[in-house]
Length: 349
Ligand SMILES: NC(=O)c1ccc[n+]([C@@H]2O[C@H](COP(=O)([O-])OP(=O)(O)OC[C@H]3O[C@@H](n4cnc5c(N)ncnc54)[C@H](O)[C@@H]3O)[C@@H](O)[C@H]2O)c1
Ligand SMILES: [Zn+2]
Image 1 (cartoon, protein in one colour):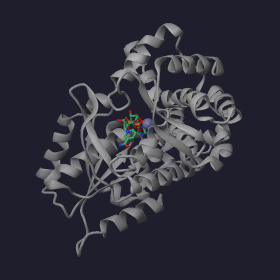
Image 2 (image 1 turned 90 degrees about the vertical axis):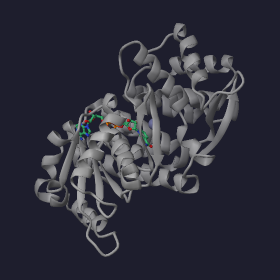
Image 3 (image 1 turned 180 degrees about the vertical axis):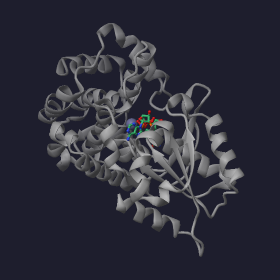
Image 4 (image 1 turned 135 degrees about the horizontal axis):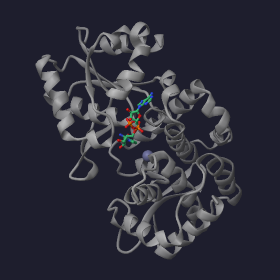
């Protein structure tokens, strides 16, 4: 934890001349479960003015942003101050957006308390909230001063939350770091070791930033970070419609297997690696994907409706020629998508 205090002190002194005042945005769960960890070890966080918001996607909206702006305003926060988001991806997306817009932008930084935020959500500068029923419909690109991983906090995450982050780590490894796949595959050992999870998350975040630096506004290369997400979002939406939530990164793990099947069919992705990922990583830890062929029309409809991936009649995917060799915008006809879903179900059964 001392490393976190040290980093905050660096952030506080990063302004010109003055030491920044620190405002913390967190949610009620993190406030209860994680904040006590900072009491002695990170006084810069523990003693800062704390803005506690309600947790969850339902509260990731402009009303909650307003409540943050209001608190900043009444405390006379300025562009020389610093807002630190302590929490998961919901907190860093929302707090980042509040900071990006308050007085035309005050600096902010993140302390990630979920594996998903540490590996993915709290790096890369995409901030925002849900609006009009659409996820992340309103937002801004705004880079944090930095992101610290609070792996000590992972101890209070559910196995589902850990797996959700692990799905994104697996994605990053397939897209940009094939040499890490073997160690990622030892999921059970890794999941039990919070510090090691922290290291994996930091490595994923580093790989993500290397891509984001080259393409901050997602005009090309950054799209490769969507690998597994076209199917993943469709699985998430289907589950939501059926009234049971599936964690984002878990849906992405199933999406990864389906996208690897398509990659095998259309881009020559090696079959041994496809089997390795499906049978050694996803099947044993993430379990089987709960769908039957009667779900295909709906899954296809979700994918076609997603403007990001759909053009005249076919769905566009990020696929892999091999681990570490992504290809963007591969148009795939529905029949191939259905065949990939069939094989994915078989592999994960
Ligand atoms: N900006 C990006 O690039 C990006 C990328 C991926 C996801 N996201 C966003 O991230 C969000 C999902 O991230 P998330 O899964 O971290 O969600 P989250 O922030 O909603 O956290 C999930 C739950 O865990 C709780 N929590 C947080 N830390 C905890 C801890 N240490 N112990 C116990 N409980 C804890 C939270 O209160 C919440 O109830 C979504 O809103 C998504 O849109 C953003
Ligand atoms: Zn994701």
